[in-house]
Amino acid sequence: MNVDEKDRLILSLLSGNARMPVTELAAQVGLSGPSTSERIRRLENKGIISRFTLELDLAALGYPLQAIVRIKPRPGNMHIVEDMILNEPGFLDCDKVTGDDCFIARLALRSIADLDPILLPFHDRAETNTAIVKSSPLRGRIPV
Image (cartoon, rainbow, N blue to C red):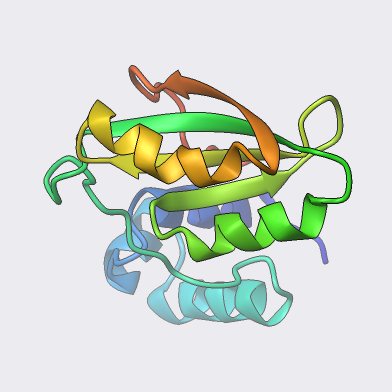
């Protein structure tokens, strides 16, 4: 599917506010409302837009800290460690990656004291390396 500059602008605006009314979106893109709606529908049908999401303020929910955890399963423990990650509700997201580590995951934490109880069960099955997130200057950028 060809994605032109108007489509890219629609994607960029929706990534900033997925609830933007079509009339406002159309005005910013320079198209009519029906034309903008049709472009959005086409982007959805082609799978370019797969869902509209909700962005939460984790600190306001009581999770002021986040940690990035690199996880390297011990031999024979890959699937067990993956299941452990999936079943630990503190993990926000996880990527399976190449390199020395197999997983890079993000944790939401109420305090630094919450880190050990979450990671301790992993130590028999994997090596972990943790970094506390100070800030996130770039999140969810759309590729050009």
